[in-house]
Image (cartoon, rainbow, N blue to C red; front, side):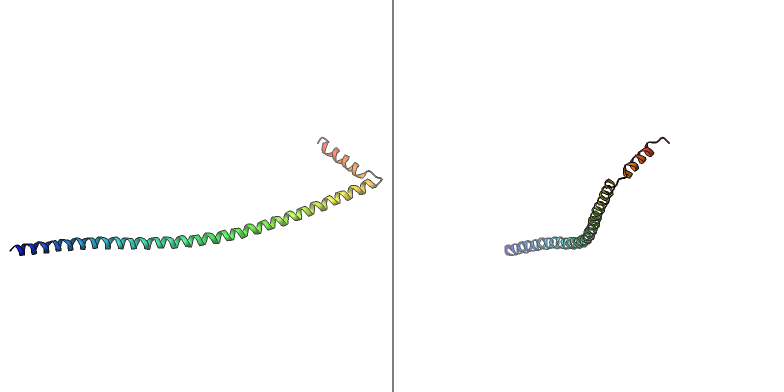
Length: 122
């Protein structure tokens, strides 16, 4: 009888231990499934972020080449402007040299007439 009680107590302890282990296994399995779901969500987010990053990099590349193109255009315009300015200076210099060598005072007369017109009352 004592042996039966010990045997019953041991079987009860084993049953309780098995129940606790099954409960714990169920909890661990649920946590594992939740973790796998979260990993799937994170992978989707990561893939979306990578796609967005590729898109932004393409936009940056396009903008960089556009900026470079515009800078090249501006540089060409500056060169042309400097060349035209030099041409204009050479023309003015040639005109004043020709006028100073000439016996007539035409440039001075033109300046005087222009000043008279701009200062004349209207």
